[in-house]
Image (cartoon, rainbow over all chains, first blue to last red; front, side, top):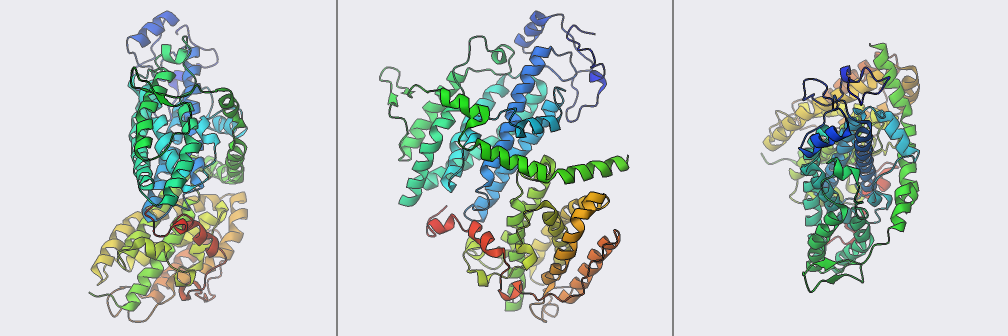
Length: 332
Length: 244
């Protein structure tokens, strides 16, 4: 029995994992955190049946739970405009995209549940009661079809950049394996968003104006998605759950998207934006992070409606879950 | 073969049913009873929209015009396909009634003399197997539960009679032309038998003897169609000439 063993959890290593293959033959243990961190620094991959240090377990759980919540809320954010998607092709792609997001949430909730910090149901109830959080971008309302495009183009690209950085060097095995699929699908979303953005850029005046309004609404939230600069002692970096600092990811995003938007004939809603004459890089204005803190505490412009919609859907369907559970038990 | 007007009417009505059901099923993304069901239900929505697209493509190269560019009276969808069903019990019952119907309708087309239609039917029928398996296993499990039955029974009694409209006959020559290998009347009998058989298992007294008025097929729209159509065309109407 390793030193990280929690009393009352004797059954952990014998339990049936819901969705992962067990890649190691038995439970691996580490004498202390130093040895565990050396294992991580050497590129070690942690599996759910290892004797995982509690601090690591909780950190990786919270991170995956936030990601799962965000995928789910992302699906809800986009659903308003699926019925209105213009034309059969757009409707099918918009629906497929939201299905992907819900599919990601599904996979991530299962991976999180295998860490045995909370069950899937507990995670869902915590989200709907406002006790847990989701990414800032999904606290805003999608006001138009062009907003839907901005979400696919700007938001998904930001999310993809973050996920790629995690995938590159992620020390938690099940999460890394799920991310491979998530990243592939998010790549399609971003390309789909790019194609639609270009159509709007070169479309009618009305379309161009619609797209500009949406860029005005979604630029700052997208840039903020990366979060404030990483702290020097960020455990997520030290434990190789994340592999790049927030500010580096944000800067790379700005360097890529500012020229793309300018080439499309759009303006960037940042009066302080300028190209540095020395290094030739785009520099954005200082970000005021205070509003983001409020948003992340479920106090954003559309947080209340989003959570209320999700809660009402969950409660309305309680009878379905209860009845299915009851019939499943009756057949055991 | 060059399809007759009757054959084209048959395909248009089927396509409109699929368009409306696909649109309605898609509404459930992210708000289903649990995530697995969200994914299953909206995968079926995608299939139904795909069927609509395949059927419209047999009639015109401009699929979007057929799907979204007509006036409400030009649609031929059955009323049951148009109902919004924003309550899960209604959505599930409509799903089952619709897919029992679809399996019969596609089966009558797999050997059609209209070869492109036959190919479409063969592909669609392979998908229908899964739709039906999903709907039947779910409704049977829920009807086996007291609360599930209490919620579903009134919906079944109200919705089921509308299903016969799927088989309203656009004309009498379709079997002679070889477009259909099973007449609409025989398809309807199969549907009545299967639906009655399903609900007999749970002693739910569905009355399917009432002849439906077939309003949808004659161009009269249900109470829900306007809102469905407004949503489908909301963005296109901003600038109908623009490419979206």
